[in-house]
Amino acid sequence: MKRSTVVILVVVGVVLVLFFWFKNGYNSMVKEQEGVQTAWSQVENVYQRRADLIPNLVNTVKGYAAHESQTLEGVVNARAKATQLTVDPENLTPEKLAAYQEAQGELGAALGKLLAIQENYPDLKANENFLALQSQLEGTENRISTERMKFNEAAKRYNVLIRVFPKSIIASLFGFEKMPYFQAKEGADVAPAVEF
Image 1 (tube, rainbow, N blue to C red):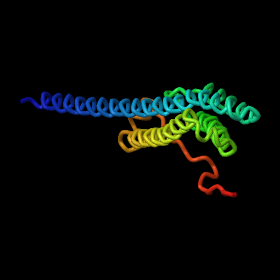
Image 2: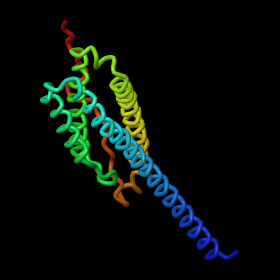
Image 3: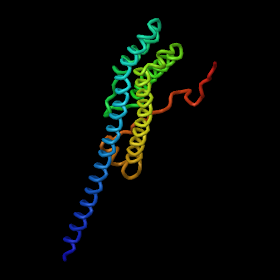
Image 4: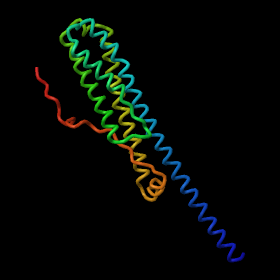
């Protein structure tokens, strides 16, 4: 073989190796990015489930606790605020995630007050509808926790993939950005005081 043919074959080989390396790196980043977006959609799904259960719970409590209107209004308002705030998974920034978490946290706090009302109403504590809704809400809260954990795991896989060398080169060339994580609210590490 001529020397020029060998050089051409080597150059073509190197170009093909680089092409497939870039292609595989880019495709793996897209796959992980889609995984994060899917995980985010599931987080929103379980938050929506919680929001859908709230009107039924509020109506059940209304029948027993008509004079607790301030608590009931607080839950309704917190639900409205939480369901109005949406985050596009393709545009997920730490600020948007924090605002979303804050709205959901306000709803969780309002729900806690609503569920505390049951202590004042023995008939409400025994009401089958209330107990079923309370059980569904508890299950939904567990699902929220699980889906947030899955989202964080998907975000971690994606973030590691785009930050390790040499794939970080592909990530910077094609604009793959780090995804934020769900984080505990400030003060969540301090146990609440229980007083009787």
